Image 1 (cartoon, helix red, strand yellow):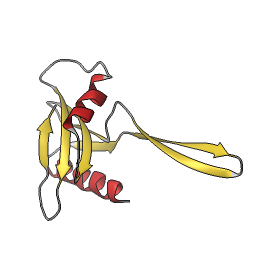
Image 2 (cartoon, rainbow, N blue to C red):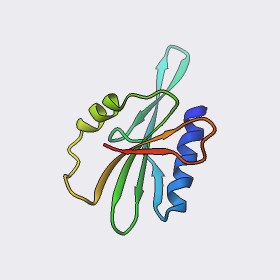
Image 3 (cartoon, one colour):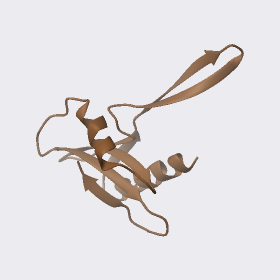
Image 4 (cartoon, one colour):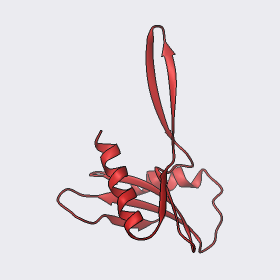
Length: 105
């Protein structure tokens, strides 16, 4: 559950900055005979949404290795408004670091 750990850590980080945050993830169940499989899907290519009175941020969270190109491609699939109040962010957590690296897409 490493992915959930970093999503929670990112949510806490943005809440300390004064944002209201929530998860953007659908969990669906798929039946394969007697077996039930849980499938997670990001909504709008984002793990989190963060808002304050000035902006709305769609956030993709990564740890360790990542591909900025892949994140850009995922965000480009959706018609986000082109304005200063909408931010598309890649938040990267590296081992032994207290703060994430934040890249605006």
